[in-house]
Length: 114
Length: 117
Image 1 (tube, one colour):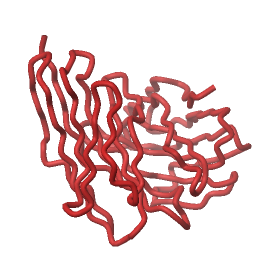
Image 2 (cartoon, rainbow over the protein chains, first blue to last red; image 1 turned 45 degrees about the vertical axis):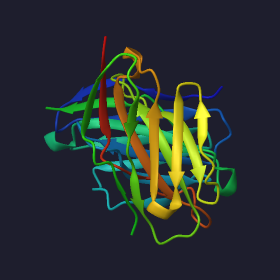
Image 3 (cartoon, rainbow over the protein chains, first blue to last red; image 1 turned 180 degrees about the vertical axis):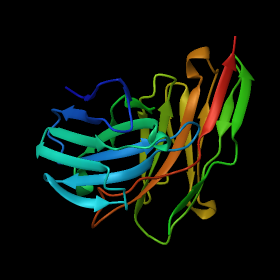
């Protein structure tokens, strides 16, 4: 299995809703990432988990709450989002250090906040 | 600080033409990795290549080839005999190696390639 699977593929939520994005990989990668991508822009790093521990938070607002329940799963909990948070949310995984032959990305969740 | 510049915002070619996507990077690290990713309309970032800063050999994979020149801090990508399926956004990216090498990927702004039949 060489894939990163993200669900749902599309999500529309109101500003008072609580929702979660899910990411799963079974490649044995021990680093997992959340990226946010606005239209016609490159992906921007949000969070990095290494061995199920949060290692990088790129000053992301607290309305985004990541969680890594185990080495295969990564969640992003969303609460009280703003319309400007509408974007493509990409999950990625990789091996650590010199074994990092590349980052494998999922196909993303297209989030619309209304 | 690291920076990746893709000066070409959009490129339009006719099928079977060769096309080169430029990438210039800045870093103070002596060891780093360079990447190219393809993003079709479906949204997924598809890994194309990773190059170690110590390996300046050019690489060819089918219709794709990459020219890494450390002296000019460039890592250009050429598609030979382009096809409509090559239409996508292409991102060049940079990552430091060693230490927290699993950390941040610095992306260029991307080049939108459109191949017309």
